[in-house]
Image (cartoon, rainbow, N blue to C red):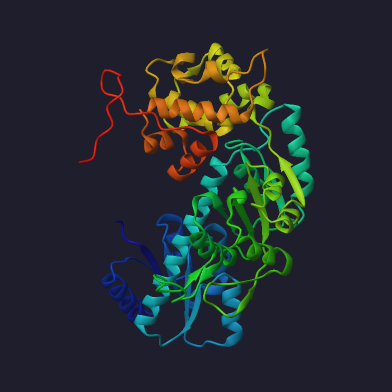
Length: 463
């Protein structure tokens, strides 16, 4: 790894030499300057990662340099040393952008600690900027398309994003509920604060409770240290709870208390904590029906459904499929370096004729697979491998229900994987427990394993 480069701006040769020798012993690459002009020149030609500057130099002071350096190199930490430090001078230096203001004589070990901490903060800042840039580059417009269905969602969302009220996003699996939730946060007054998300379907009661609210050390067996829950992490920000319909009934009152009283308690703690979060919830299930079945609390339902936004399925916005397909195709082709590929018109037509039970998520996955595996220069309909087209395509005949779509989709996946539930779950982008629950719901049994000739194998007998 390349050494970090530190500029030492000091006119006293004894101090300058001692600093250079010490910093080189710490594996820093040291650049030396004796005045303001030399420091400016070093920043233009050498791009230092940090600088240790004497306050008083032959042709000026550090206060003359700080605004100029911070304007051209805003992330570079600057440490100022002075022989005659005052509180007012220190305050002024910090205001102008100095990382630290130290009075001579200063211990070398103190400079090492301050420098190491400053460079660590610099790395974190750069990672944060890179993360934001990547997030912006990878983010998707949830309203991509021209259909009246998605335009209605856009208008409704724009009206509620500036408020602080809870939002419930309804829609089928893969329709883009999570993308919409992130967009609401990014365009809300809480945009500078944390956005944390959790899929309630992926956790049992105990694990979900500790993930949301945290726990104290010794709260239960295995809790060897304190854990901060997502509610605290999201303070003043947004919490997105996906598949809230799968939340255990025993946890629901605690979430209701946060929404009504803005208070909660960690597991094993006697102290209540204040929290200020905005809740965005999502579910592919009908929460009102779950309330009738007593699987979801009515008081929590009325609280989380202050505003309900329903994301349409792709079957309800067929005119948007070509736009979405080309959007994903261009991004995936660029990411994979396959810019020579083209998307045939008949391929777009095949996509428009397909029912897309997995909605936008399935569309994106199909295009990624086609771009990755296609040998030619043109993606044709057969390259999409739309295995369930005949069973699921929406035509002029009777409209198939989403329940039937799911049942056929799951059965086909199980058949394709020879009854192996784990592989079928991976193919469907589901957890095994979720797939087992859906199989139970739809009355699907695991097909018997088959041999290489396709004949059913005999069940193993016990001795």
